Image 1 (cartoon, rainbow, N blue to C red):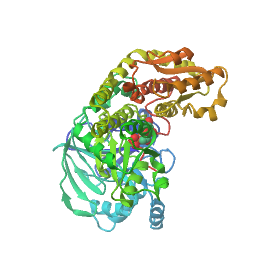
Image 2: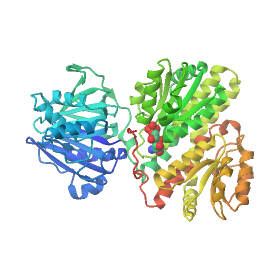
Image 3: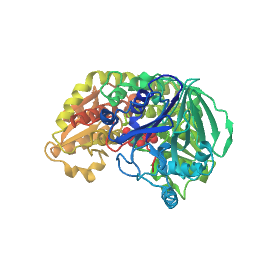
Image 4: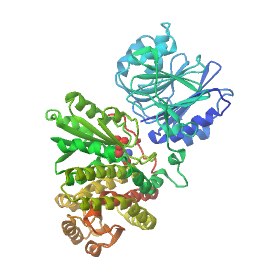
Length: 617
Ligand code: AGP
């Protein structure tokens, strides 16, 4: 969840400035503390504290390094072991102040290792799990090992997850990086500068060439060159293929928007248009196994889980088979005794690194090797892809805002493309009918573009009105329950408001008791097969004095007539478009959450306690 960055160069460049800018681009991964270490004349220079990078930089001047320094590591932290304090911030050093380590992940056996090291006289300064690593390396260096050997010996003792970047005061041109279950990418500007980082945007302004480090691999970075090793065979260097990044840093910058979240909502039309172009052959490859599977599960966390709930509706319509959606953290508990052969698990993850998802997938593969994992992610080469039989990569582009927005719509779109491929393969609906669904899907980006152009002020007004109330909720039926739940999640995340998305029918069995005169209820009301029943629910809430705000299509009349305020989606009234309402209706709720965050003076890009990629259990 933390962000790590390393740079080693032989150029006369301002590495302090580069390190600072680079961890700022990783701040979405965790932002409760940060730190930088530079190396010069056989000494390490550390600056670190708790707080946001900009605040700390004001007084610590993180970018000011000793003249001539050519190597730096930088870290932005999401606290796991020990609260966000200066002492717990990374980098962590050994007893000699010669070895510096930055870490992303969690070491599970750190308590026993700490006891062992304490008994050998090591002195610990922090409450973190990370600090055992420099001390372990120190211990192995005492045994006449060189730095690489000492690091290999140390990490072989560590259980858990890690992305690590390590430097030593007496190794002036060397960063050693290694990983297990936490992402680490190596960037290379050949002959000049090498970088390592938890994510590509950190070094993208400086190079487009990178290597993706795999689990149990180690990299030795020198200025402009890198050597790779397997941890289990660390004497022999191994070859890896360099990859060229085909997106630009502009995609990972705010581009004139006040926040990434707003920019990314407005990027939804272009993200959808790109995702629409995923190769038809790979969609077909993904769809074919679903036709013959006996059991199909769809699993994910958070927003990706809500995309699963929406997407499974669309797939089921054409596949005609039940798909069970299970939150990934509950997957193993629920299926421990009942996962059968010839099952398929569809796994969704924006980051492809969510440990709550990776774990059950690894478990399922081990438990029933014949099971197929079909995954959808936005990140090429992410961990989930290694455990998957088929992978579809959404083309949302980098999503920096912690709250997922454009990746949500592209995930549903990808599942919708799979659904229409299934329709083609099954040959049950006429080709003409399927074509109409395709055309409706293709018009989705225009519908969203049109909506966003005209409705921001209305949503702002609704937000200021809703602020008069402590509580409200989103209600829906059918596929739109996923939209309602996602709307509620967005408000919790960015506006710190515990607002729920709920089934409109089910709300009669409890939440209706909250309704008083003027209590707001937001109904998600596309004119699909649930519309007439939802109308009944609207009346029930109106009869109790509820203030009805509804999300409807432009030509809607019935629910509009019962509503105090309507948000109107420019979507044609037909079953073809209705099938994709979970994509076209959500931008309204994402904008609502965004403006609610501003109303509360909160930074929507950095919700309290959250991190973009959750790699801890
Ligand atoms: C989304 O706004 C949240 N940040 C969170 O719920 C997220 O969707 C969840 O952690 C899953 O992440 P993933 O898609 O990267 O697996």
